[in-house]
Image 1 (cartoon, rainbow, N blue to C red):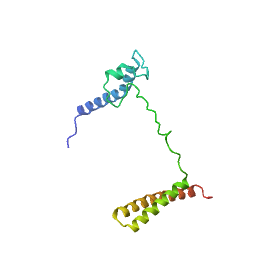
Image 2: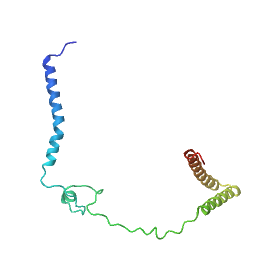
Image 3: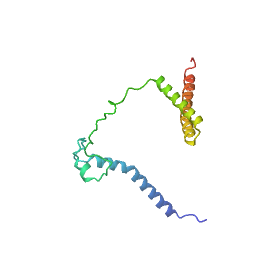
Image 4: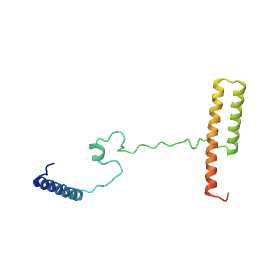
Length: 142
């Protein structure tokens, strides 16, 4: 294997030195250019910045004027919520009704409805069991 000539090593050293000098000087030049601007940037917030709104093509994801806020009346029209006991009784009644319907009229639709509802309740029970276990782990005095 031939040994490279010393001229190649010298060129490589010069190139690496120039690269290092550029990498060190580039941030300083960028900071100097930023500081040399005559007019400071002022955020107005009222959408009157002509460069931001008119000269740049920002697309439909950016607003130059604030969108009008629509008042949400859904909170005022909500019916009073039932208690947890009433909700649990309603779930139990629904489960019993679906089970009875699936037993008396064993159609695929009735059995499927019962299985789906029961599976949702089993998932909820599993979550309750996990939270119960975590509570005991966090507070062993329980």
